[in-house]
Length: 68
Image (cartoon, rainbow, N blue to C red; front, side, top):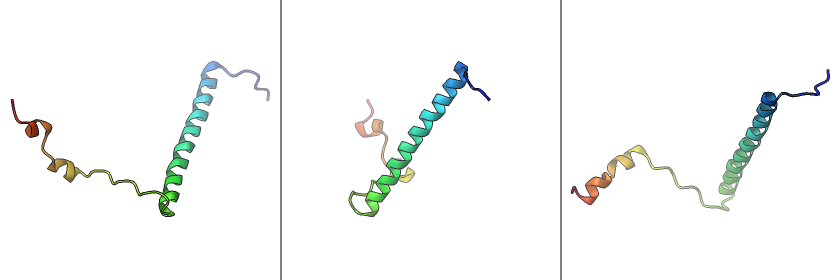
């Protein structure tokens, strides 16, 4: 089996798969490393995301500034 030629469509798809895999691995390592540092208490834990109740309790920007 001799693969001397790869058409541009296949080559582009292979390149995208490789770059996507590298990006996914980088994000996975970043998340894993952050959890390791938090476990060892070497960094502060990340702040929790705001909940739906907390955002619903805040008045709208137009109500805070007053109606014109």
